[in-house]
Length: 429
Image (cartoon, rainbow, N blue to C red; front, side):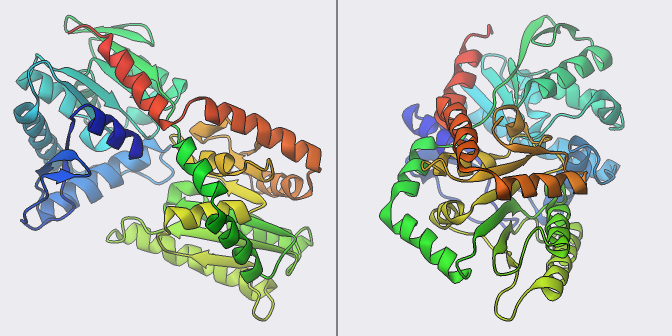
């Protein structure tokens, strides 16, 4: 992440992470001026810790149990073991009185483990995904252990306020923590809890969007698409939480009803590969490609599909060109911690053109009030929002985009990192 890269570079920081390989190999010690420490993980550990407990237990549970989470004791034990390995690596590497910033749901036990090993360090934790309501979190057999792990931090950060409140209420119910939603007393320490909405690198995005080559690429993309009146765009990691199939079905029905017309309207859907070794994600890809094939078979023209589907990673400059080429951006996750695609699209549109259809269950919905908000479970609601976005008057389009750009540009990703670290500095050891 560029913000963390900048923070680490400016503060002589150290990045501790998995090497990305389950085979023993020499990992680099420095990258872009940042010192690195690699934590090893074997193939079975990767399957149990990452594919298993992190992404088949925690991920679905924290995303409203859209799919039923799976609970296996062997996965949990591996999760404990790998978290301990990260905690030991941090304890060994951290200087006296250092600040350690731990990130995301894969490492929720590390704060407590690290505190036991190094009580002299200041510990922050940030959860990038949602934190579920009490009724869902209570399903987790190891809920008390997870809470105790997180409460080892001095500051626990979440994307939005209600996620922070969910955690604090759960901590007061299922642990010995007392206090309020923002300040908890636990084991003789004060633990602060708060919302720190993540953002994007506004300057980088604006510079790319204004670059002549990017703008020319955007024009050529529209030409490649047949110069349609309206280009609709979806950009998502391939994941069942993103609501991609529901979105394509809504577009299909709009073509069926005549609200969208082949040749005049076209959609581009980018599905970035994700967890390709997981059978559930392979099934998600298969089902999505089936839906895309059906809509193109029903409504496409010779040489002119109505949905252009890309299952690939794209360079960021190419994504920015797509954002510039798109008239309507559709972001409809069933649940999302934040969703930075929505903010990236907004920051690209210095021309104040473009319309955003946004799920009310994305964290970004609290900041992007100029979007056409939808309940992603409501197919008719998605269709109506797309209709409104396609037909919006130019003045309303400019007003909506202007509001969203003003809000997004106030705090970029560097402000996010600094605000969290500033709050962490204010905590007492």
